[in-house]
Image 1 (cartoon, rainbow, N blue to C red):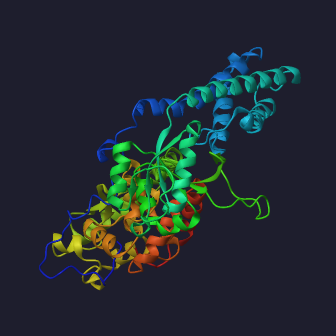
Image 2: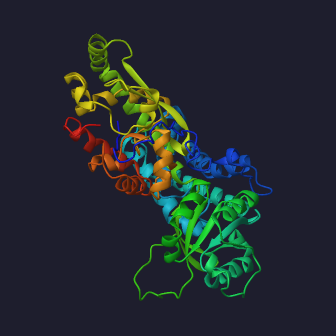
Image 3: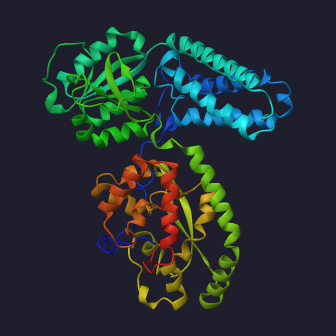
Length: 484
């Protein structure tokens, strides 16, 4: 159990578990009162996101129809379609926020289709077919995919522009907003400028858009206008308004940094860019939905590994439960309320290694009272982290993930959220059994500020490979006597 002796509860005071405990981040979607933009229901947005994968599925089927006897191998066709879709997803060819032309996407789309058909020709039962037949199927597949994407692009161009907020100094944000309003075909329509209160006397030139100077005004504008795109003008703004930008990402907004300064014209080196918007170079800071990205892959990894581990450690769980029952009596499993993703509470499971004097102590005391009086077996469980094994069931249920920020009790979530900037942003993703902070030694009575930094860095740079690396490093540290 995590602990910190420097945050004791006031004597005789009951824990304020309700204070900011389950509202760590504004809830997403309908819970937060968000309205979808006018004319675009949530069903329409989901259909728009699914249209490109469906185009690729249909294109793969058309390509396979060219091959004689291919329909006798439906598994091969399914694997071809899934493989191409996976490659396209990794290349972000399904990101509807990136508006690209068919010619711009042609090399990437055809290259990934070529990889798929090469695998079919080398590994599938269709490999004895003549190369001319496979080449014809590849050509039909590419033509169908490009035609479908062209139709999707024309349909997307007819949609009304999405409302957006421009974040930055007034002198820089107004010209950017004016340029975007002069180019309605770019797909974005500014509805407000977000700036510092001391900057409201900036340049008055440009469109007369509402100037939002407080976080409350910004959140209200997001909800009332159904904003899903936030444009950040300049890297300095990104650094200065980090807390607000994290909140906007938690609302489900996609964050883009626009280069509104003087262009380098090749003299400053190649800049990392994700295309242009009304002539401004832009870079994606945060995809729409933020921490939800990669959710399916992460969830599949959690289910496969946690289910497998539960089966493998069943004998260990049984032995631990029996020994605890014999030594300490009934109540082998310890249940405690913790705060998970988006500030939602859940019941965490552990083996009981101590018995708190009261529910108040269990909820508000950081260090375990009389920890030195634990039995040797309980100390062994805590030292080897075997007492955490029941949390594999929390992972299977979806309360937690294998990798993520460690969950904490409501009382300490409220305290740390007030005292440590960035603590509440840890709840943008499912909490975990282990995490980046834990493999760097931040367990038990260690710096909360350091944990915030590592946990938020993990979320900001999440990848499935990073999860695998953390799990491998955790396995190597599993039996070290660092405590839980």
